[in-house]
Length: 312
Image (cartoon, rainbow, N blue to C red; front, side, top):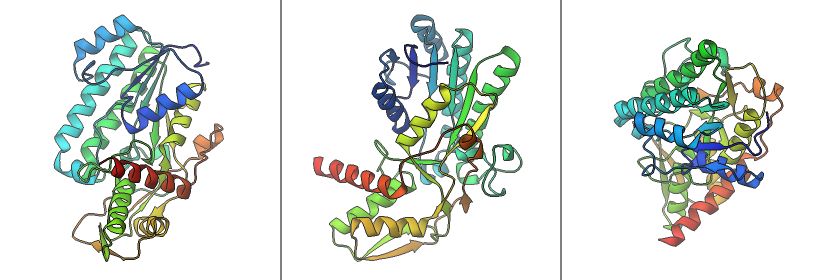
């Protein structure tokens, strides 16, 4: 199918990933786009969501809306992460089915995979073991969402696909210490330490945990690529296929920023899952490759954070 001229609803267009999808759609010449702020449409309200679909009749839906946060937020608020994400997913997916949406894209996270499984993580490893406890609420919600897409597809012929990105970063990422993900959190700490001429920067955990990072613009391109592609797969990993330790990531950021102090680790804090790198063979075999290198993406994100600092 072709997306051009289709009426596309981007749920969660103000978030990091949603805004990147919106930018990419506009860049590609799409103009028949629907966006709603949280005030305009509460996705946790089933009646409001159903009324929206009845009035707007979107042909394509991309569900990028979610309650997200870093490790601290996930540890402190597991109930909210489970409840709010499941409410959003249930309402949007079910209404899309009821109103005959042509294609639906559900976006999840590598948090859906077991804490202890072989690396790199294949799509087939889903539900083969317990989740990482520090983000179990979020992971369970996302598993429910992708299974809802799978079941609606098999039972009702619903045309949906679930894409699982690795750790994303980039434009519109949060630098709030309470909600920031690891890469943006490191950038804030290291840039601030450099600007304040500090002697050291303290990072949570031991530094040995490894993560895979993809720039959000690459992720947006992947999402539109797979929306435009007919495939029998229900689940596809989206990533770069290689990871980096938190220590080496911090060193890379230190080098780019020019920070002269030391890196110290608070080992009383959790590392989370020690290794989480996804197998992207399925993505590559279907013809998609990311373009933005980690160094290029880090530099861009550092400059974006510096611009934010200048405004305040």
